[in-house]
Image (cartoon, rainbow, N blue to C red; front, side, top):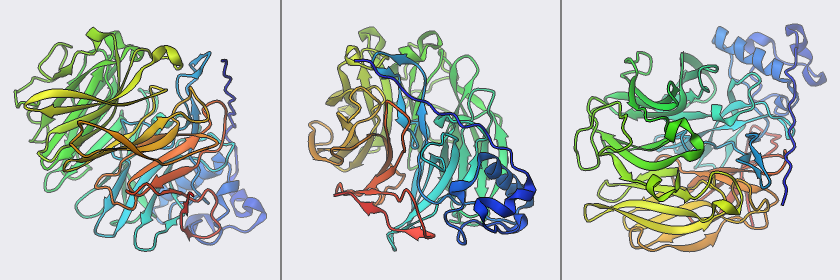
Length: 498
């Protein structure tokens, strides 16, 4: 079964400043006061990448204008370009990619809104990456037109997507990922609490896979990756997001992908390792934690561990999957009722898409009677079938693309809801969230402090060829909503799927 992916690279436009007043054949606001958020909701659809870049540069240099808005929720489509007879290693609608960008959505009780970031673009056939920010208003059940926080200026790679944080005063922080040493990461802060309209650039540096965590009364602890000797893990702290301590290496065993989360004052990181730096051989699973903002790190049983971790055989090891010849794709990290970390991962036999890598098992790694316990939930068809884990007492849930989608061997599939009523010991699929979809759904992401009305968000996309990518979310009961792809008004209600 041979698959062929179609790509479409649009060259960056060159538009003079004097032409800004004639965009789309209609008058625009003067450049120094452009808002784009209410008067012409269809305007951004027709903007070239050059114009968007100019607008954002003017905004950040002048500090007087609001960010431009897109006229709907259009996710980024991407293909990695590593093809086999069963298609690309991963491809499709990756607006909520990667699992190592955490968090990307946060419920703010103070304003009853769920804020979220995603990788977007402005047209169905456009692959130019824009860092988008918006929110779901739980009181009005609406979303505004999303704002363009940053133009990646020719980049089409969702590895450059952003993560989100909110400090105790309500300021929004957008951590835009860089890539390797060639594309720097950037940190932005909102000009006002809980306000998406205007941001200031705070810092730029070598930051990939940003994982910022704000600890009330202490400030930020930021976990991220640098391409030093492979994808190595680092952390840094800041009391205010502006002044940062020198970065320190957490782990360097050839490379790693990590997921992190916070329980009260405890930050936990779970990560795999890449033998000889080869990401196609990612394996094993490790866990470290800190309760003092990175001053000391310990294992799950509070045994001190020296950083950076450089030996693959160390006390942080959860399980030696390498000895079993298995690969590990970490999806999510959450906590049980006692604060013990619980990890969700896809465990497989091969990196390439197609049946040779089966079984691709969804596995829960939890603590039971002081030991690690491993429970298989189900199997799916792709290593990058990414889902999220929810825990409320003994009631655990997983939302993810566990069901085969229209592109059988492609990234993602049909979304399903799995439940356990005995703290993860046994699992049952209780609802299929999407059915008969034209495109695969992928990367179901759990908001921090998830509200029942906005419980997971994701995007769809054709895994075999360039397509539109629509964004979705589901409530806790499994009712799925589509974010408006085209908007003629400044705010709109998401459309429920039947």
